Image (cartoon, rainbow, N blue to C red; front, top):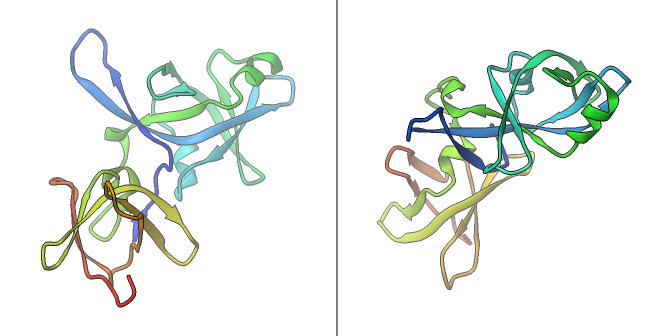
Length: 188
């Protein structure tokens, strides 16, 4: 089963003056001010929303190419998300200005998803092939349907394929080599 972390894009941010880049993942979307003291409503983009409560160092940004370092000072559950207090945001106007930005964390700060789970970000870009070696395309993105997650596979000049991300269909996941092996069911 896919362990969804972020439905958005990953980002790379240069660390200090080094050429080394760190991958970042969007785990929440800031949706507006709450009250007058700078709290911000945040909608999780993860199936582990508690990650926001214990968020490691983070960045804020609307686009993955322009991220600003930030820090969550406090977070508490609220409605279908959380209310957070960000460092340096102490009034309603400052909180309102952040509406529409995303909360990003380092990919390296995420725990290992385990043997039966994968992060969506790790699956995006993987080549998809059948057990017989026929290339189907690459994972463009994933959909959450409620019953199971669905791989959206694209290949130039071919119609898009929707492939259920289930144990019955996905036979092997090799994120290190960016490859998935699938057993297509009749009608796929």
